Image (tube, rainbow, N blue to C red; front, side, top):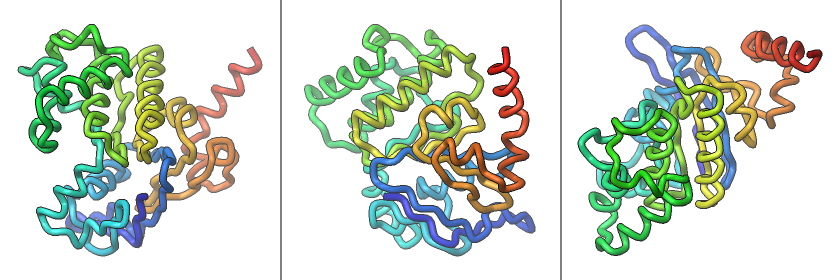
Length: 250
């Protein structure tokens, strides 16, 4: 469903992505880890078609985004459900209108169907009572779930999420993790999630990879990833593995 081949991207003299390749299969949840500034969001912007690579290909469901013109790219984006890093909700719109926005702008859907689909996804994510609230009246976790509802409402084949649990407390993080899993299963979608939150990664992923020096390394099932002997993976996981080991002793 997602194929990235030999992706390279520079900004001035800085090499951000260097011959990066990854394949994500239909229905799979792939979680990408990495340190701040490693290029995770730059990669995500390529998957969304917001950036063009210096070289290489980004193929979504058989469509090469690097070769698409504006109209073709808009059609491909209708298959993408995107949850942006900060949520990107419209502050002046209610929860209902935020979630309905892509249906009204891109879906050419009649209003009764808009109401039905918005109500369906809000109920699925436990937000039925928040319909008329504004984003400023919601907790951080609820805002994240509203962003996921908006990403789901077009029934996309691919879900893209950038740091969906950033800044949340552990209990709220668990709620958002559940929302991600619920959304992916309800749609049967392929999911590509960027995070630095290791518990989230190991809880929701089919495979986990690490972005290091412009490439994805160690892509494997969570338990296999944890046992990786790659120096960069071991260094990234060191503190977390030690804390987990100490917790088990207690």
